[in-house]
Length: 175
Ligand code: IMP
Ligand code: MG
Image (cartoon, rainbow, N blue to C red; front, side, top):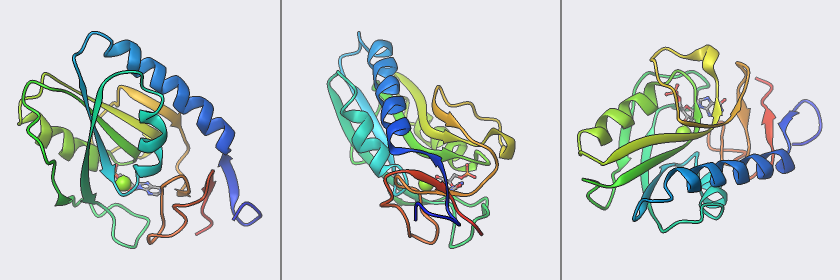
């Protein structure tokens, strides 16, 4: 996968350094909070989530939510289906959503609105990747790992038709 036609966009080393910075930023921001509920959005965020939480020096609780926004295509259907919801109440909790990538913004806009209805003390979004040029819904994640151009990428948890999530780096998929 690391040889052509798959061009590397972000190396494992670049990702590791940025994830560490994000972990420190988040630690500083929530320093005074009693605890932080980190909500990983499956499946795409699982690799990022695992690395990020180990760079957060706070008492965290991990929750997982599974949503489906894309079928097998590389284009957004504009549809979000919740396959698995949180297992705990988040009322009065500090909540951080962890996403792999914000593209049109539809998935995160839907999730944020849905979680906000549950009345958390605060709600922020941390995304590893952001494709601002593709935005259809106005959303600005508080924490962004990397802004990337309008290209379809896989690796480090991100897939195309469920494949390539296990790549340690992020590469541009030649479609
Ligand atoms: P949005 O709703 O258009 O913002 O799409 C967000 C979701 O689409 C992400 O959580 C990914 O699962 C998927 N997605 C968007 N762009 C890419 C990409 O370049 N590679 C892999 N998945 C992507
Ligand atoms: Mg995803």
